[in-house]
Image 1: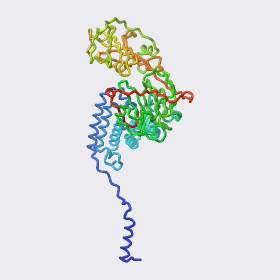
Image 2 (image 1 turned 45 degrees about the vertical axis):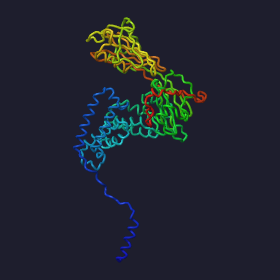
Image 3 (image 1 turned 90 degrees about the vertical axis):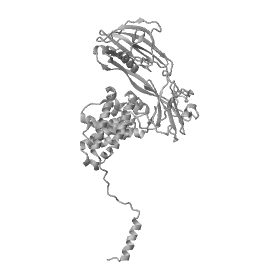
Image 4 (image 1 turned 180 degrees about the horizontal axis):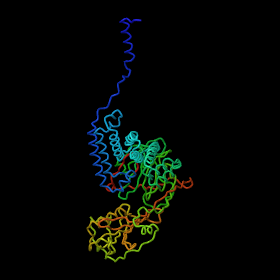
Length: 534
């Protein structure tokens, strides 16, 4: 049948009216051509910059970086490097339609480094899809699987909901498993990750969950909360602020249905009892101020009271204490460069102290550049010893000092320093001795002294007091030229166990964090980043 011209025009008009709003199908657009030579040149330059920056940090710190907060300067550098790669067009390497423009090995190498740098920034989660692409392109590249696993672990510390806390580990478990399968090497971090995230009994309740992570030193992966948040499970959103007050660093946690300004936190111009975060048990700790951390769990959010690096209680907002914690300690010899001496240190054997002579009060002048403790006090030298700490070096005079301060949270410790007459010695070895003690010092009574062991004169450092710990950690050090070397290190590793409280063990909420009005002139800046506890 033939259509007349008029009929044809009518049919066309109908089709236009019906399909005038139909979506137009476009041919797939090919991405713009990437300048591979420029991208490679930029990548090589950035890689050299990063390698130079890494050399400025101790190897021990770099080795632990996936499991610790990245140093701020290195984190910022990583962010800068990732941004420069993005400007050079690294995003085009994610598009498989551009695969014919780049050698496969170069594509994988640049994307792997891009993902690695992203994982060291304040937003490590952005690295996960990049590194997933890398392992998809090169499933036999073991280091890429490890980078992916570490990116997941860093991201867990910034996850703010329970859904995120349980979704991310699936990626990490696969990544760690693939790395171990490819290398055949045991990896303690992978075993810890498997225990914490693959064993359902760990997260059977919030108390065992917190105890397990603290025992393995992985508590940083627990914390987080969004802003605003349904903190009490009553379907009402609140802004929650955790911060320290004044020079004494008294902890505070407050909530508000509206966002609070820094000035309002200073002046208490809000209803601080809107949500009750107080403990309902009878605290039996040392009385020092706790640290406060918020974590998501399957049935809501919980507040952890922490002292001496470990949990002491968990509170459900508006409901009080859920459980308390006990801790036991096991000695662990973590460094052993002189087995005979170190085994004695591990066994708790006391060493002979080097003899000393008295100094008259005020005999030693301490200046502000000494490197010794100076916050709110001045070291007081009382005794000295003339010894040779380095058999290959010159002998020296070592002074023993006490330091006590009531500033802030207070500080009390004993230390040693090189003396030059009635002044502190100014030398590389004196600085090394001051620096190592500054690194180790504990304001609750740590002590440095000189001891004799197997004919050597060594420095012994012992830690101060700690909750439920009867034996302090100890470290033996020696002088070698202008450097201080570790001979032995005996740590006291805690294991945490939770004690769930019965209703009879609790009472009506009673403030365990007395609110004190701070001095606005002495109050440090309040940091109020949403989403994470301190």
